[in-house]
Length: 412
Image (tube, rainbow, N blue to C red; front, side):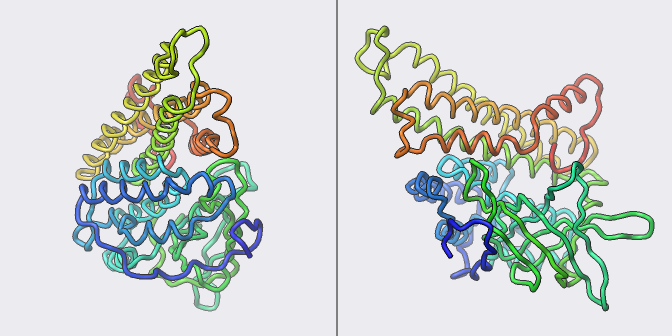
């Protein structure tokens, strides 16, 4: 079996080759991500074009310690700020959009643990992450026109058992644990939990069937659970974490914004390089180099400004999220959610603009398949569909006009 085979069950990820390095602070996290991004950029076009699943890159990613940077300091991690987390994701995203999305649900699961798990569960899973284990996800389901989860948790012969089917499971192929949204019947209602299920548990099947035109090597395929037995210690409250104000939603969304920002920044850098080295000035510009074309300069300035504005809103949103973390109230979490929604709108617009202008300002030769520059547009267009910005505009307007707080969930 090769990495390009579709709709074939995938073998479990091998255990970590070694214990990862330990990142101690925010500055080190940024420095490590910058070095790693340079490595990832070198093969990103080939990985996307030939759909080569990045097993080697993921192992390098893990070994650097970047997957553990949000583990709280009291549990041995760096406990970096939300802004540092967003910066790390954007830095990696500029090099390879798929590689920046793969750990998104890993960090999301860490936030769920930080907010809602018991101290015993936190110690166990945080230590596993620092030892090199990766989390994937099995959150979403398809086949129905609602957002209800139908993957269920129930008791059978004295065991807790999971049964169901998931899709859009980004990172599950590469994971050692698969955080899974499950529904359990309790008294007169269904209650949602997040179960951390070992990838190699009997009854777990992962199929590499993600065939979207963008984010092609994120491993966002199907996960099936057929009578999978799990331990009660692996089940973490989830629904209750949204019945009260928490930062789970803002953290989830700011990472998506950072992915989009990174993809846009990568497209912008490619555009600058192509204009300087390969593009021709338009004949009516009467200049010798494309980099002197006045209309090109105007457009380059516009893309730069949009990306800088998006970056500034992302920083502002991260600060609001950290303020909410320090004091989680109805108002602080609402402020963080709205700030993140503002950033997500602008990172969406800026990334798509940068990906479009890469071609418009570089000319026809920029469409040659050897460069595979269309991966920036495909990645930006695919990922920006994650949680529609039209509903973010609505939430922002309702907040500022009517003082209505946004809903508490992971998609605002």
